[in-house]
Length: 401
Ligand SMILES: [Zn+2]
Ligand SMILES: [Zn+2]
Image 1 (tube, rainbow, N blue to C red):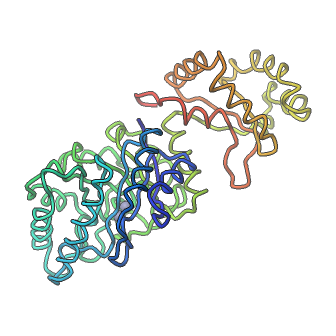
Image 2 (image 1 turned 45 degrees about the vertical axis):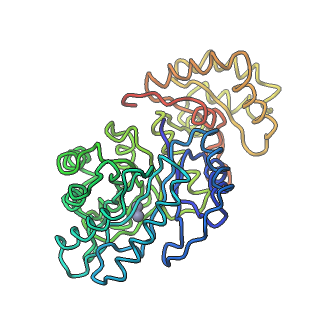
Image 3 (image 1 turned 180 degrees about the vertical axis):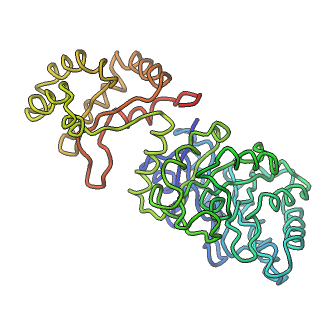
């Protein structure tokens, strides 16, 4: 399954994060186990963790991803910093046993003048004291922007660390799109080339997760400033190609964009719609372009209310929709909450639901499906209950959509 989520605050506990992820359409999430800038950590509440495990099971979260504190530096020139980092990671991994099969991501660190080779040696030695054959978490090295003496800006550096550890099956890589772009890999012009290089140097089988971020800076800037999807230098086209890229198809995606929950909700939905092959068109735009069927809808049917006119909509739909390559229409702004509920109920529970599910699957396999929407809500989301249903209920078909 295609799992997408975002970074969430852990201040209200594990189960709260699970519910929050669900509320924005996510199937996974990333979080800090402790203060990202300091070191302190509350002891985990086993009951709270059990609640999250239940949520994950019920809603098919494949895993979750814990991010190590930014202050952790396993290759610091200072012995006490390295020792403290090691202690934090060991303690974090002990907590992660509450969620077997999950991921733990960390920044390799900054060698601060000791040189890349020495840095790699220190990180590898630390990992060899931390990783055990019994642990149930996979540890991930994050690809970095390479600012200052930061390691991980070159795939070769990650490869050297992977090569040095005693339990290689416990260590993988998380690809951060902003960092890789900032480090100078051309995701915009040569995605295939970058993934080819990754495969040759590291091996795509070692790639276990993607941080999906736009970047405030151009390729090669070595800056590491994340941006909302589509508002930065990478742009929606390149990010979409990456999300649809076959080698990345089975990986979980995590957003670390500068967003509130509503912004994350929008991005999760957009990324899922890419995978599902859904396109959006606003009814009024098509009406202006002069499609007759839509003009009929806008002029005659719509203003008179939906419920009364559903027979007329159906008739219109049967006649016009196939020729336009559009399949379904639903206009469900906030002001028709009862209709929205009714429609969702029908999609989920009616006798027709199973058949419709099959129809949607077949349609999605054929190619992009255009969803018409009437309005956007206050946050600029398309209001389309069918889309909501597709993204929640329909398994997104394999293959290049
Ligand atoms: Zn990170
Ligand atoms: Zn990241």
